[in-house]
Length: 326
Image 1: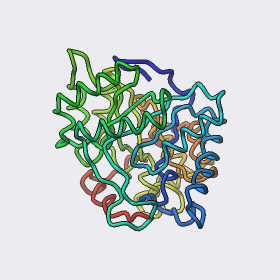
Image 2: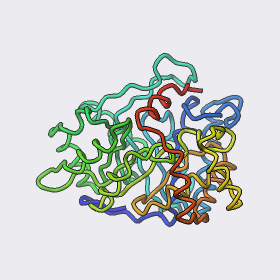
Image 3: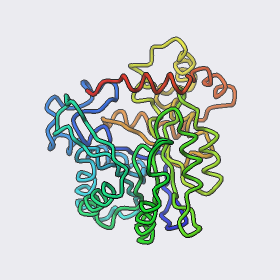
């Protein structure tokens, strides 16, 4: 993973592990009632997070992704690293820009509050540094959209450049139907004539492909591309994959002797611009199934058949906005 401001080694596996599903008791991924322990205490989720990180590391996953708004995800990650001092070959990414407000509840009026101001950055980078210390390799602005002040705030850019000077890569994650516009705007941001953002993390999957060309441009420009929500918050995992238009996913899973989630992830891994594709697994079995994608080789005809699943970006994001925290 490289940028103008720093370098970290790329992970041996192109699959990374995101901790959004296990850092807090509530999230929007489908099926969490069955995936998580009946009692979602901090200790129970820590145990689950440790099991996932151990299994991921054993399978050569070397990128781990957290965020300030993922409950205790940064803390679990820091504790896991401290308990495993020999794990020195991993890249640790986190994000700022949302504050977790659910108070460890699955049902809350507001689960997180977005703020991309300089003040929010200064508060949250101090919090992240207090937890992760110098293990932080990548710090991303969380969920940037074209109207985010973060794209034009030069005072913020200067602050981020100071962090970059400490060998932390500066990145951003994107969301919403105009992700491509956000990515291209971010590519143009400079500080003292140098590109600020060394990475971009974007939703891309069989259903939502609208950012593909912009991600290819980012990769060509030397930015690291991290794909999130490659399973569309569970919509592309076997138990929830029932829509008729997703028939090709089920068919190709049978043809390749693997799972639907592995096919969906393999289709993203097949994009040459996708440097890291995140698994958001909540169980070790899910992670094992996801990791099988690294061994699936889809031929051009199969990839063409999977194109049928794509939805208009506006429709996709409208449906995502209706997913319930559970």
